[in-house]
Length: 411
Ligand SMILES: Nc1ncnc2c1ncn2[C@@H]1O[C@H](COP(=O)(O)OP(=O)(O)OP(=O)(O)O)[C@@H](O)[C@H]1O
Image (cartoon, rainbow, N blue to C red; front, top):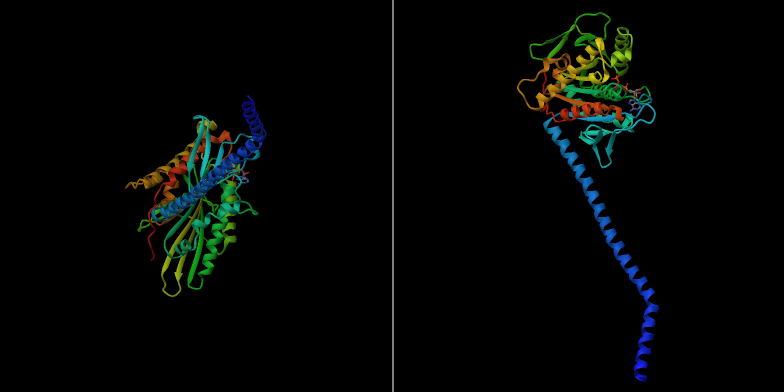
């Protein structure tokens, strides 16, 4: 019994010690496991960080290849800009537009009818917080030295279109304000810089015309005469507008003065300038004719700045009478623009340029030897989401167009 008691007492002491040590062991075990979990987590973290890094790299590469593809295959770029909310949107409006933090070519719009977000993939998306400077930088894609070179030395047409529903920010982005100039001002100032830089070897003459298309009728905004304008074709297949004023200009100030005159001319013909301007297309055509001082080679280039009339859904706005007629003409010409672009994309032998005055006038600008930048403006608020979806659907359709490679053309 004594030996059994001794053994039991020994075991009891050992158990006692183990019980005493248990919290320490447990603490150590917890610490060890915690360390293992932390290590495992940080490995996962590192992996996911690496994945995000690789994803971003892939996105950059994808964009680079896409850009190269566009350069190789086509000359049209589509940018989207959402304007910020404004007082007209009401107090605390519900927003419908969102962006992808990792990919600046994606924009999402909440589609109330389908009850989900619809995504659109464009060349570049500018959010509602983007600055004029950031957006203005995009004209750099169009007005690059090599294209300026084209513009000055080959027949090459550059066009900037602004598309979007009424009040979506087209004028703000294109014209901007005195303090915050828009794309047009930047593009034109780049153009005159180029002319200056090449003036040692080339004699350039720059001229402007300003045409308004209202209810399928062309109007010369640089004259107060009201002559009927007709689009005619030269023997070489190029287009011109008969009797259109062609005003020689020396610098950006001259262009702005001409533009101001056109603007006041447009306003006097209408009781409400803003109302009227959003119901008509305005096309500013800048022509650069060059003669090489040594060789005598003559060249021609054009820069078109096009402020399209606001796209609007007649069923929603409930327009009637003259307003309905205007809206129908606008929608017809914008859809003709879409059809032309669609035919070009599908490389159809017949492109329906003549279906509207807008596409007929811009035939050259949408054909080969041209480079086009389309800025699609959208409103960020939910009450406009169906118009936003329509505009972005149009934008995506345009983006897939291939205009073909430019060919060198000198006289
Ligand atoms: N990025 C912006 N930042 C600040 N205000 C803006 C911006 N974009 C647009 N706005 C404001 O929103 C309003 C509508 O813009 P804007 O007149 O440019 O639209 P629009 O599309 O040209 O309209 P319309 O088709 O009627 O001519 C203006 O008051 C303008 O100042």
